[in-house]
Image (cartoon, rainbow, N blue to C red; front, side, top):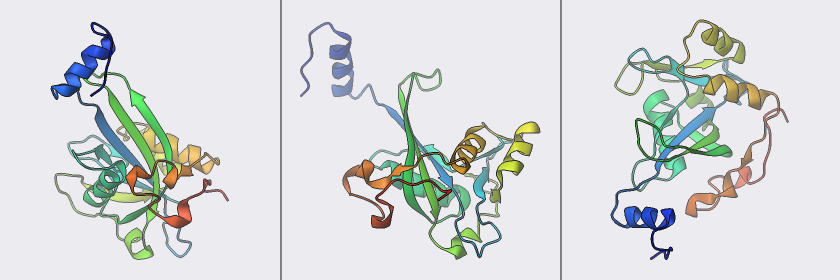
Length: 195
């Protein structure tokens, strides 16, 4: 049990946690690039057309109880894009302030991944269901056009793809490990996609 000075904000949070009233909402976003030179999608970015007219985004969603960030990211990539992925690194871990719609603090992770196989890369989702309408590979130029035409849910995918194409840093997947060590032994050092 955590000890905190009675009457302090920390004490109130500990009490809420012990009563199960305070939970940090966790989200994961997955930036997926096609690395296969033999694929017509080489160096393109996976974009998901969200349902209900929300626009194009990247595979993303909440982390379910008992799931790790990587498990949630893999699940979202399969559900929203029909994409079997392998994680290569972390881009960022962002604490977010309370939001009106959650009334709780949130933690957002952004992971970098690639399709596990060229077959997976060449078969993104092409059917409508409750998760998404479809998934397609897009260039940064195409994402910029989507932004100009107000077709993006948010600029996250465009900003992240642009950042990575300019040599943005990707931290080793084993940096946090999520209790299991590196998900891919070959991805245990940091890199950028321009190398």
